[in-house]
Structures are given as C-alpha cells and as structure tokens.
Length: 68
Image 1 (cartoon, rainbow, N blue to C red):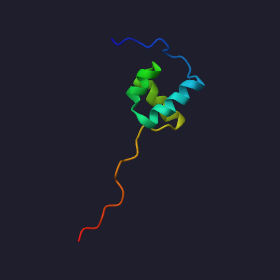
Image 2 (image 1 turned 90 degrees about the vertical axis):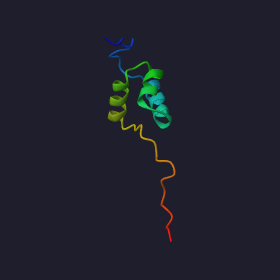
Image 3 (image 1 turned 90 degrees about the horizontal axis):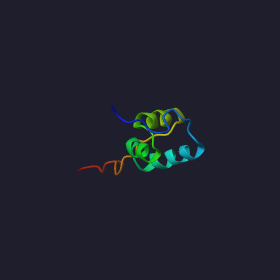
C-alpha cells in the first residue's frame, strides 16, 4: 500500500493555494502534488473545486494557412 502524506486530510492554506495556481500554469497535477506533499488525486480535486485548470493552451494551433 502507498504511504500517505503527512498532511493527509489537512485543510489547504492560502500559501498552498497560491502555489497550486502557479504550478497549474506550468506543469501537471502529479508534479504539483509532489511539491505540495499531497496526493495527485487531492491536488486534482482541489483544483477542480477552486476553478484551477491544469490544461495548457495548445501551442501553435492557430488558424491554418490556406493551401492553394
């Protein structure tokens, strides 16, 4: 069985939420979970409940040039 984080079930601090928002812009839920010391599921759930998205904007997917 996997080891539980030390802060299992603890409420989220304002600093953790700020960090979560910053990490969501640049990475994945798994990377954020590792830095925050939470499980990936807990990070994804908190992000979803607070309206934070881990989906990055697609790179280079603008309007396609017309072919002649």
